[in-house]
Image 1 (tube, rainbow, N blue to C red):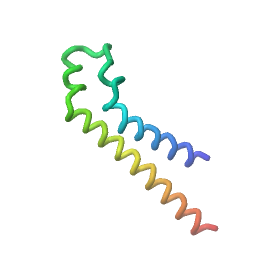
Image 2: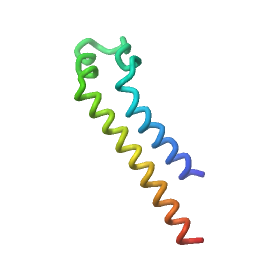
Image 3: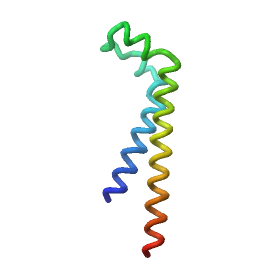
Image 4: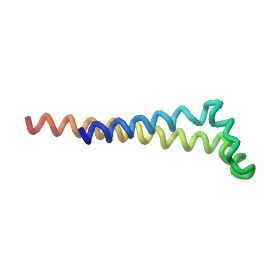
Length: 75
């Protein structure tokens, strides 16, 4: 159960990081200081956040594969 929750949370965080920078929600964050806001709205920053999301998704897939392969060896 712990492995399932770990994979699920990693996958969900990855999906959010991939999608969120390209939504209107990302643009409408008025809590940011103006100097930071220009950095956050930069396409490079959005791409970097998306890349981190893809890394999280790959990590979740890798953990799933390792867990399933380990279960198959012990069964």
